[in-house]
Length: 338
Image (cartoon, rainbow, N blue to C red):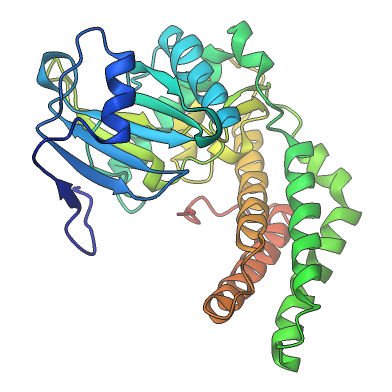
């Protein structure tokens, strides 16, 4: 499945040595090559991303991403110190270059544009095997254990931060009575969820702590043909939410039975019921993270208020449904989350 775009990507041609990504690449590469062209994947500092065409080893493409300093340190640790020691396909890291207050450039192997498709059973099974190998093998990687917490405390903080942001928006005098009601409902839902957070923590029992990606959504997963002709292989990008904890957030978008079949040899005490329950927790976690992102400062600007309120209303309903399903032990294995 090839990724589709709403419009053709912007391309830069000509003498490109002036480009900030190229200048940074020249500082990192052993034998730097000026790219034939630059594809703009995400414009604008401080989170720009570019594809440097033909600038990599053997004429391959290089993805240059500009990220905050702290995020760069986290992702570099994952790409350079952890993933190479695991039996999973991963983008090759080519290095990084700090630009001071402007952040850091990360240079990675280009893994293409073929995205993971939730509706494809083969993709879900492929991802389940990849995630299963990642989780079971990473438990022995010392470096992974030093990553930020990725368990219930992280998502309790997402809950509280998201609720604070929503409450701050309630002070907006431009809100109508209906819009105030839209904001108050998720606050009440978050209050109730925090009150029973101990149930969420108990639902995480039974599965070992390990390396967690934290955002295994289709836009962060790629497929490419295996170099040895063994069929497609899956790779994950954007490890900015990586951490150490119970792997709940990585489970909602994969085939759970295939995942359990993959991990049971290394984790014989983990039952399929544990996997299904943890996937239910993962759906709650993902919605809490999404609510926090949506409610960040600037969401109530005039141009964004209407769409943000509609999305927040949808997320609130999905969060409430995920909590009810988890507590009633009705984890729907087909309720995949994009």
